[in-house]
Amino acid sequence: MSPLWIVRRIGLYVLVSVVLAFFAVPMLWLASAPFDAKPGLGLRWPDWTSSNVVATFEHPYALTSLVNSLVLCVVATVVTTVLAALAAYALSRVRIPGRDLLLYLLLLLSSVVTGTAAMVPIFVMMLQLGLINSQLGTALVISGGLLPAAIFILKDFMDAVPRSYEESARVFGASPRQVLSHVVLPVARPGVATIFVWAFVNAWGNFLLPFLLLRDVGRQPAAVLLRTLYDEGGSANLTVIPVFSLLYSIPVVVLYLFVNKRYGFRFHGGIKS
Amino acid sequence: MDSSGLGVRRAVGFVAPALLLIGVFLVFPALWTLYIGITDYRLTGPAAANPRVVGVDNLVEAVRDPLFTNSVWLTALFVLGSAVVGQNVLGFGLAWLLRTVRPGVRRLVEGLVLLSWILPGTVVAYLWFAVLSRDTGTLGLLLGSPETAWLVRYPMTSLIIFNVWRGTAFSMLLYTSALAAVPPSQLETARLVGASGWQTVRDVVFPHIRGHVLTNTLLISLWTANDFTPFLLTAGGPDHRSEVLPVLIYRQALESGQLGYASALSILLLVGNLAIALVYLRLLRRRA
Image 1 (cartoon, each protein chain N blue to C red):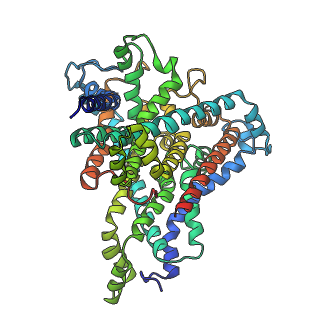
Image 2: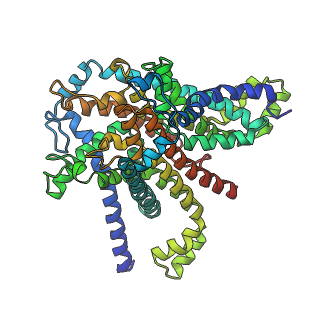
Image 3: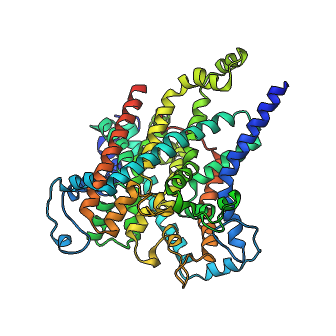
């Protein structure tokens, strides 16, 4: 251990600490403000209280919006995962005419047509169809946006399932439906779980589409309500906002912990490199 | 017959529902943008009922519109500063440095970086208000200038730093898996001949991960250019000084009600996306 080595190690840890602080400091607010008697937009040691929590639960729309988020998110996630799994399996196993072109277009679409670039036509279309304020409609729009990438990533997982498994299942007389549900899906489960979590986190955090398409406050998800929480005086309602932010963040944090423990965050498939 | 026993007809049936949703909610809107973009369609008023085709007038107007040129410039700055440089460099730096620290420290840092990536955008916006706001904001307290309203005085710099915080996780993950593929023997050789850290990165690591750097840069540029989160932080203000393209499109469409003009702006964003995506797909193909 030369002195140079020690200096380098110290330098390394100083650098890592700075980065750690950069990422940690903004998050501390989420731990302090919800339980502070005088919550503000800033960081300070709280005067501990639970009255903000009570106020949040009594807020007329806070819990409704979390339920709305859940409905929107579950519909969008389930539709995305199921349809993507079916499509990815078929595309992986059967040479449908034009398959390669289709896959190429899907990959292109998934990156080119974003919610931001297509917001005007999506808004106009839903307006003319009378689907403004429809939660199901909004969920389907979100699914439509997630599907191309989901199919593409899942196809990689499906390609990795050995075909000999299906062949032996069929020798024993399994129908295609049984092959899919009893052989292929269990083997491809990490892929399906990846897509499920990815779609859930995306739909849960999506702000733009519900903001455009759900105008009735009773139907808005948490992402939109959080943006519009004002008190009687017209300024941001800081009693409710911190607790609500915390409640709204819990599902993604739980999912993150689950994924981290079960699979670890790393790249499999999808991003080819 | 294929291994699954599906047959072409049933396979088409499996693919059809997904394609239907994609067709209705993605392909059709994209094509419709092209049409709305050449009309004078408005949210309200006479042009709402009977939009007129005005051809390329919208595009001509956009190119002459100082708000649009301002927005393109700000978007380029945002992408260059926060994605191409910020997320790329910090993401690689983290992947590189965290190889050698203790596992506990590594997990902690990675966990926080990932958390800042997956927290909902609206929550994250409040977290950064708490950092950047006037009077009580954390940054003002740390730097001893509580009277500075950072988002008002330095809107673009704030957005760029915010987006580095928000998006570095992806680059970190990608470079971590890329670095795992660099042969350890080559790193060992570099160490034995006394190469400095920078020399090792440049001469040993970079040739192995060049493809990853390009992939990463293209993807994060595309996402950053289309990111709507700046709206949550500054809503384009003050005085259009942080009005990146997605925010401009939203304000023109929903606040000014100029749907036709906003669609023309969307077309330009779509063309930009298409250019980046085509380069990316070309790279993927060449490597495959």
